[in-house]
Image (tube, rainbow, N blue to C red):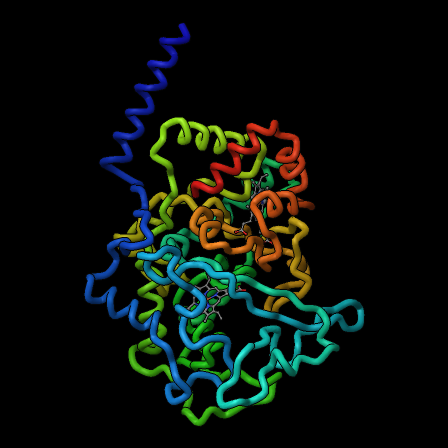
Length: 414
Ligand code: HEC
Ligand code: HEC
């Protein structure tokens, strides 16, 4: 009887695999070295060059800025890898609590830049002690970002509803509707950045070019200030010209959209692979997968995302990918203490779920964990889960030693 059942399951599984082979959806390519097929090699090389290019004050860098290239923080995840990875570089945000415990950003905004051109005093050095609520945010990886962008808003809303249903209302990711800079008046479900502050990679590129490097473009035409005081860098705004939204901003966007999903670090030894599979089962059975979703599917090719401003291309449409995240905000007790501009009060203390894909390469590179880089090991990061994820953390603690080891092995294989 049991063996008959097994056969039936096996036949069904094969039928399912066959279905997905001819129809939809397909696996998203995974690689740190090869793009996902979105661009021709020539277009990709040009986009990569823009992402790596070191800017100078003549091109609009600064006056106040964090780094002089995207690559400066988003380094390659491995020796032969493309740029676009994570890094231990963190950014500082600050403010203070005013009357009625209302959070007030530092003058000019929560982001405190670390460098300045030509020996000007940096914000970080001049930050007044009174701006005493401070948080650091680490650089996340950009691999697979194009697939994340092409997930329909409705898919993310559905995840939040399902979390509530699965957990008796204990877990429910917060959906943040954010402006799409290139589609004025339209919003989308935020998914990029630790505060899920953007839905579109074009919007994020314009934002990062200005915030990180002090280079303005059509979508972010105002330069970085010194605590709210305008500083003229002598280059007319918008500094990134060409194309519709700025030549560089468009190339950064192309580059990120073309990055493949992170590759897994799977050992060839079958016994070890089995242990990793067991670890994945434990991960699911103690509830980690409710927030760290093992699989998402992008919208169909040809459908539109980003408030109608981006049509899902074939290379990104109808693809299954494995982020081990939900891109929604949760309060798991890790902070942050600041409340960024644009975030409603009810999102205070909430942070986007860290997507666990690429974890293996991050650990090999020695990156610390959690949004502020405050956890030194996987165990510590998991044990710090409280509030909405307290039950899961407790179950992790109670696992048999051998099961916990397998679960950690699984995480290291991502
Ligand atoms: C000084 C370091 C630094 C530089 C330079 C930098 N980034 Fe980032 N990047 C970060 C940090 C830190 C975050 C997380 C931001 C936050 O707090 O939400 C981030 C987040 C992102 C994200 C969101 C990824 C995600 O999944 O949440 C994108 C997209 C991005 N950066 C693109 C760029 C581009 C394009 C450039 C160049 C114009 C750039 N970055 C330059 C540090 C940097
Ligand atoms: C309620 C949703 C939720 C559940 C359930 C949950 N997590 Fe998380 N997890 C998060 C959030 C949110 C973060 C980001 C926290 C931060 O950076 O401060 C995170 C971060 C992590 C990190 C750090 C990743 C990194 O890149 O820094 C690991 C590892 C992790 N979770 C593993 C687990 C494991 C294992 C379980 C099950 C025991 C679990 N999580 C359950 C929401 C959840």
